[in-house]
Image (cartoon, rainbow over all chains, first blue to last red; front, side, top):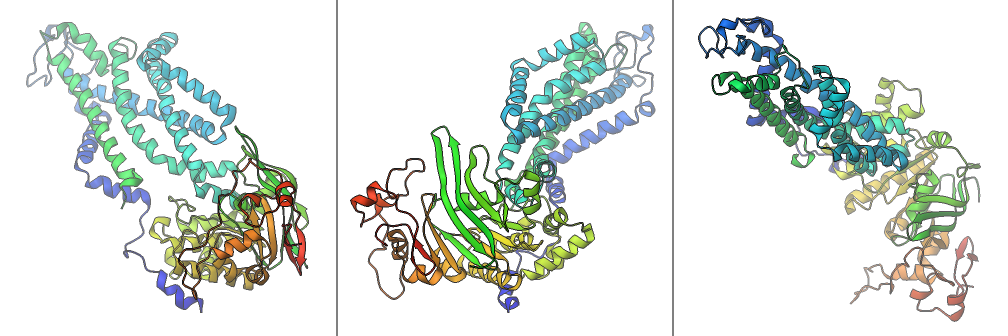
Length: 297
Length: 322
């Protein structure tokens, strides 16, 4: 008997195949042309970084002084720098450093920020006060100043720059996750999970974290762009990569005395920074549109 | 009365806020017997939901806290039970369904995943077994194409379907008590009737006792064996459903019934009880309903009446019904 009147409510809007939310997001992302351009730029630089030894025609750390500050030519596509090193080869190897620093510093900030944010948001009380005040203190400093201080303590090197960038970005992700947790905690499905006897740790892993992933991914992608700029800034200040590492920011600062005589030594690393950052920002924007639940129909 | 599943006795759940200690539930006594459907009715803010959350010990703390009374589930006091024991009970022996089916399911997991989760928490069932059980439960609550729906996401289902899923989830471990906090309020009328049918069917077949919280007297008439009327944190009238609906004793219950539209008479204006529910915490001496009661006497305003038997299994908290 129950079967008969049940039939009336069982239609679905469309008989489409079942897709997971992630798949749906990918579909939306694929339709976004700008995001695809961003993705193409990033994939291009990733390929350059991976195949750097095959692409670069010259070693990045050796040059002939007689060839110094030569303009772009068939032999040296992007010209040579003040040490006679091939700028093209250096830019190609530089992609490795920038992507490495950008990606891993963000992974570090995301992991630490997410854990702290989950703890602060879910447990509240003094844990929240403690973590939030630490974030407030960190955010009270201009971030690059804080990074400089950290590098000054640890000593200038690429690894330490990466670490410093990871640390200064923790509050960004921590606050983001905390605010997500605070609103998710009040959701009925969390109450429903409690009502079926679920443990706190499981509620966090099953309900809170998966529902916070979308904004983490979006902010993380954008964060890579910021991290690359910050790494370049530290490199420019001589606090990041050390010579002869071909870090793009470092290349800018090394060549700035020759900016009028040999502008190509500045233009190409600068252009590379701009392009990768643009790529990450475009894809980040696209991801936000694709993952935003309010955009769903 | 035979075989009580749940005995709430003199329950006091207070909220500790900036404005002071607020007694949201102030000495409530309710008994639910095996296989019985008991309705709790009352206006918004009278403590219905807090009572039900207290049974599950899910009152948000802070600010809420059970400060007195006992809640006995099959003889075991839940107020003093530890969190681990409560987790065993929740979902397994006492299940709960909520008002908002649209938000009670996690949007990022499939239906089967979520029902299966409830099963795996309390049994040693494997993934495969719990999935099969989830499909069985979906069929039981009247969801066709259960094999397909089990792999779908909540946003692909309508509100009525989601409430069925919630019921399937709640019933998955054969609880002895189901607490339904306004399960049909967010649904439209035709779906409401189906959900109520379903709950009644489960009550009959599995002998699950149901504590139904609602402000809809129509739902009460349809579903309940016994009714508890609450006002400002107190039980003010209690009795079996026919008595309460046909021969209410308490002026508040009479007022509630009078404010229902009637089919047979044409009414110019719908009756409404004058005034509002007192702000919790601003409690005065005397009967809490006295300020809104058109029959209030000086005695009502100075002294709080007790819940007294006024008939067979019929109790009322009013000076006038003595």
